[in-house]
Image (cartoon, rainbow, N blue to C red; front, side, top):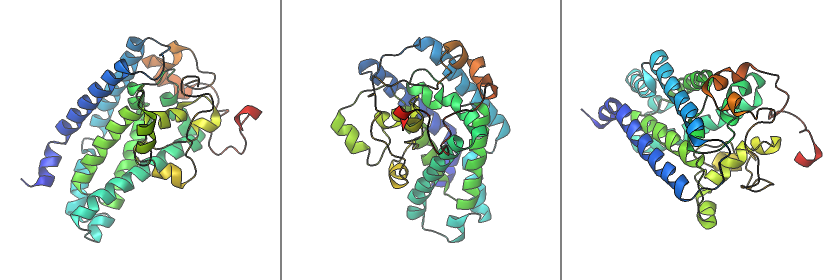
Length: 287
């Protein structure tokens, strides 16, 4: 068994190990050095958010039994994808593929803010009234399915090595929990990390109730894309302890922080705000 086969065979265990390890570290950090005071009971929110994670895991395993690493292995055997077609050296293909897939995730994130129908799905993620590591895994099952289809298309077109897909999956899960953490870190460390990795203070701006702030800082792992395309915002106007988290008009915990409410949320109300392609944001204070 070569290294690629080993990674493919052990991908579930590798991902689970990194998930549990990162979860434990960030959860402890939140207890020792919280950034904000939570508004809703942690037990209430965590039960719903983690319940949604379990539901999404079941849905993905049922609908996509091949999984991303399986498709990457099949693409390599079939010669599919740019990196396989041009026979890019392994040591170049792995980092290149990880960076390219991160860029696709950034584009996908912008898309779910720009298209009103997709924003309906994505607002389940934004409707959390608090902001902690479980927010990073809180997505509607339909958005998870869409994300998997985009990931599969990316793998077929790009042809990333299996190792790159495993690294990307681990990084995506770990950085999502980290940058959604309700954690405080030294300002100098935050500034240094922001040149490469999305920090909690950077991404928290994206969860502001204010339109122009929620339509900024779309990155999950790398910060380069927001800086390059002009969507980077350093700080929220009200500060990290004074800003309001969530979505305007959705402020009832029974509606947005309970599992049944989250599943039904995309089908409620009208999309009147937050679309990134709006020419003007409402209210002088938010311009």
